[in-house]
Image (cartoon, rainbow, N blue to C red; front, side, top):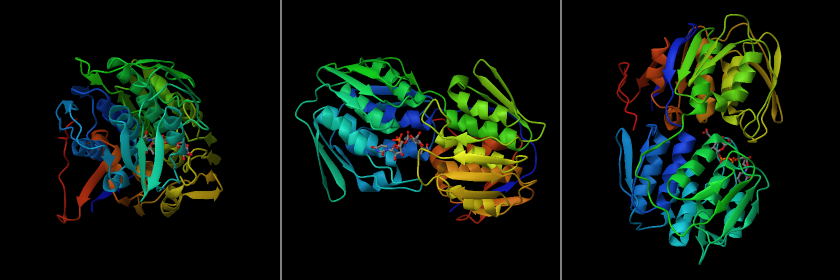
Amino acid sequence: MDKLLVEGGRPLEGTVRVSGAKNAALPLLAATLLAPGEHRLANLPALQDVETMLSLLGRLGCPSLVGPTLRIETSRLFFCEAPFDLVRRMRASVLVLGPLLARCGEAHVSLPGGCAIGVRPIDQHLKGLEALGCRFELEGGTVHGRTDRLRGAEIAFDMPTVTGTENVLMAAVLAEGDTIVRNAAMEPEVADLARFLRSLGAVIEGEGTPEIRVRGVPGLAPSVQPYRILPDRIEAGTYLVAGAITGGSVTCTGTRPGDLAALLDVLSRAGCEVHTHGDAVTVARQGPIRPVDVVTAPHPGFPTDMQAQVMALLTLAEGSSHVTETIFENRFMHVAELLRLGASIHVHGNQAIVTGVERLKGAAVVATDLRASAGLVLAALSAEGTSEILHLDHLDRGYEALVPKLQGIGARVFRLDLEDRGIRPPTDVVATA
Ligand code: EPU
């Protein structure tokens, strides 16, 4: 098990090129199942979750070749099952449910169950797919879905769900007739999936709004041009907060600044200077951090995936901030670890009251989920002394080349490989798959 050593307390300065978005790559990979043939995807991030999705597709019968542009061959499907060992490793495996039902008329997907951030049911996925003509049975912890024919329908989600909207869109594109999805998730990753599906021949409009309309088509085919996955707004946000929390100046390039609007608003209210220029965003801070109240919300609101990182920043504000988590019921696991670094935080239900302290101090902390881990890395970067961050498997799932990217902006961060009992030399060779 590896751990990260962080020597904090130095301002980070420089530029980070943002990778492709994990949460766009995963549904796009699942969507390749809808159009038999060879697909090519550019800007695919080299992440553990992407590898898990490629393993899952490989087990279904779709081999892939990772290179500067990923090639994946989906002409033949031998199985239509997402087994427990893969779903357990990555909840997003559930994204093959819609495509398998549309392509094979059946799908067997192990139920994801709860995880470190909440219960996370998939009832809305099933409700939407049932409206399109699927039947489900739960047996032995696996959802067995079948359909004789998918038919367009009107679907209104009880709450906007990102992967639920994606699953329904992927089934609706091959259904007979029209589908209207109301209360759809408006996240940029959902819109990216809609654009990708259009590149395969699907007829979709309204992505990025709460109402998406789909006209079913009889078949889809891979596009000749490689499809470029959109940049990761959460990765960008994490590095921008690294600039802010250390009192430095970090520029992220290759971003879509509009996707970062809610975060940039919070950072400027917290006393940071924010500049955008084309695909580059710079966040710098010289003065004190001002307290800010933050409420997570579906896009275009403040993203829950940035809550832990911004909470880390607010631990050093001049005053008290309220951080309210409205998306997941258990997404304050980082609080106990931030306290170990010297933060002052009290949690009442879904609200954390963060009272700024003058400085954080290095300590050993345990990462509990992907974004909590990112929050802890940021806190450690600002803390006096050395911190150790354990359980790096979470970070490997979602941050491509984290260590070299941080080292590139002046961070003293090293990965300790406990199995080799030695420190890996800093590496700048990380393939963008
Ligand atoms: N929900 C239900 N029933 C459903 C689906 C969702 O009750 O059938 C609830 C969830 O429990 C949650 C809320 O609806 O309270 C929203 O969940 P959503 O379905 O939108 O989350 P998700 O699709 O499972 C994606 C991202 C998460 C991100 C959330 C919210 C992917 C692969 N995952 O999850 O990303 O936090 O949307 O934006 O796209 C991460 O990258 O670290 C991560 C957790």
